[in-house]
Length: 257
Image (cartoon, rainbow, N blue to C red; front, side):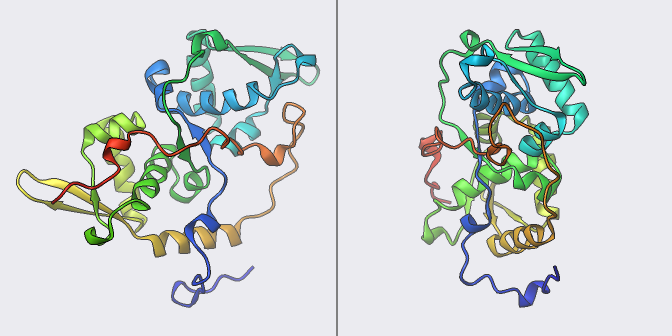
């Protein structure tokens, strides 16, 4: 499909939500539990599937590497590193079954019986857009705050490094790398203000919408994916039923400059 140049694209009747996928419910508390943002992402999605597995399979379900990639954006190496971390923590059980072999999974839910936080709405489409799970997580959370900024701030809001860590689990280095990627993509604008300096943020929403629209039009139909835990594979990123107003509500309003 031909794509119109940026200055000729007609997005006037669309909103950002029209271009977003259905998000994964990413639980920040799982970063503390596992010590890894990637592991927290896989665990968040694994809980979705564990709750939907049929009793006929004894609590087991299977997923291919391609399906994990489609749902989380993690590469094969990232998946394997993450799964090992979850196995070593005693959270994820795996079995190889059949010919050709498929990897079946089951979570030890007793180790995560109570999830203390409200999830972040993590948009998988951002990983493809900016090429990074961490940047996709920061962008997902930035979209949340951008929608809640006061008009008198002209779209600007600020957040400290410790607040980014509290909300996403990303280290200082991971935050800075993710933000740099978003700035280079022309999506996130930053300004330092005041003494001591604070970093204020604003999303360039027209640029984000334009890039999402181009990505959607360029996207080829995905290859046929095998049975996902005996559920419709098209629902593999539908993990939204527990998503409520986002966590850390005490930072929902920008303080004065």
